[in-house]
Image (cartoon, rainbow, N blue to C red; front, top):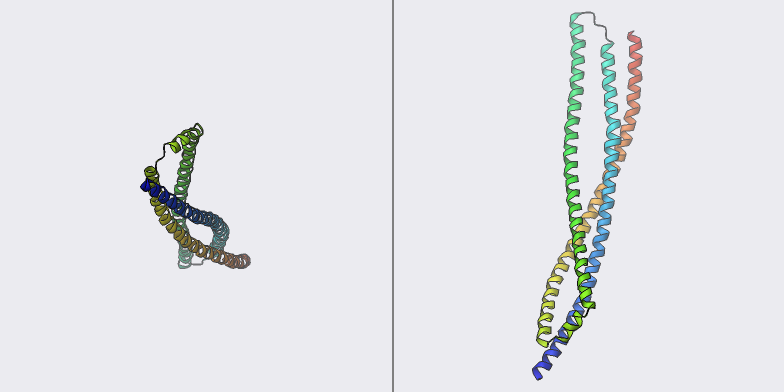
Length: 250
């Protein structure tokens, strides 16, 4: 009887210890969850900033810059076509220069196509990664749904009296085994929680650095837009000079 009483007391003490550890661990897990949810919000904000930078750089700056270059090539071709050679040598010069300008333009367009191909490849990789993320979310959701289904059935059994039957059949030895199992599970959970907290802190620092870099890139894109727009004014001036030259040559 003394041994049974000692075991009951020991179980009671260990259960209280586990309850305290559960309370502390619950607070740590909840904190990590909140940090990770905020982290995901920051990551999503960074993705929006990256999309803004992409739109500004690709659809904005790039389009204007390409128009500038194409207009400048147009000016060169117009000036060459307006030349009036007076000898075969001069005619060869005119044709040769026209070919040279066209080759330069083709080289430029080929370089742009290479860049577009690289951009498309990277975007495919990004989309594949996003698809993988969606897969992880879907799997996580399904796991939660399955857990809910299982708990609904178990709760129904409990409500029908199964949990009361388990309590009436409980023994000190069985309680001791489950208390030990709970302690071992808590040890593993604590280790996982510590790793998760450390990883979360590392990710926070990484995202903060990413945000800084993204914002700096946005500033660079905005400054480049100013340069491109200033170049546009110079291109227009170049077109006017070309037009004036064509009038003089006529």
